[in-house]
Structures are given as structure tokens and as C-alpha cells.
Amino acid sequence: MFIGEYNHAIDNKGRLAIPSKFRTELKKGAVVTRGLDHCLFLYTEDEWQKLAERLAALPISQSNTRAFARLMLAGAMDAKLDSHGRIIIPQYLRKFSSIKKKAVIAGLFNRLEIWNEDKWEAYKATTEKNSGDIAEKLGELGV
Image (tube, rainbow, N blue to C red; front, side, top):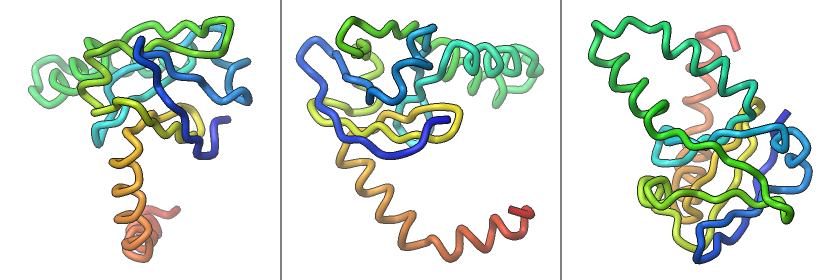
């Protein structure tokens, strides 16, 4: 289970250190891809396989499903941990997420999200401000 929020630097080669508590799960294999809200999603290989199978099963006749599958699948890249627990974030994903030097890694149960630090802080501030409304909407869903 991935939880927590961690600040890390990304070097000039696009290498990002993964928090040590997550490395064991990710050593078996991982995939990084475009996420939502201009962040990146990092999945274990097993979680990625489940998601990719669900995306592949969506009807290709619907433009929204094609677009979402393209966003996630075409943007994906294998992410192998090096001996220092780092992954390489390809340039096209750094550009998509506006990650330059500082990143935030947020644990969201079955995936990690990798954010540009400034965008994460702005997103978090807005979400915290609207937390009452968000909780009410989730209550309507039975959460």
C-alpha cells in the first residue's frame, strides 16, 4: 500500500529517487505514465497489468475511451529502479507534468503520483479549502 507525501529532487538526467519504503514493491517492475491533473502515475507491474487490461477492453468506438487509453497506454514507459532506488522520468513525461528540479511523490494506495512541487502545493491548497464540499459529495456516493 502506497501512502504519504515525499519531496525529492530530480537530477539533470531525469532520475528521481523513490522513497525507500516503496522500493521493494517497485523492484519487481514498474510503469510510469501520464496521469490526470498533469501529474504522473507510477504503478507496480501487477497494478499496471490490471489497468492496461481494463483499458484494452474499453469500446474503441467511443472517442472518450480511445482518448483516455491513448493518454495512459501510449504515454507509458517501463521504470526500472537503479542501484540507488531511482527511476528515469523520460523527457516527454517531465514536459507533460512540468517537473524540472523538485517533485512530490504522493502515495495513493495502489499507485504513486509524481507532481511538479508548485502544482502539487496549489492543488493541495484548493482541495483542502474545498474539503467539506468534497466530503459531502463522497457521502452521496456512500463513502
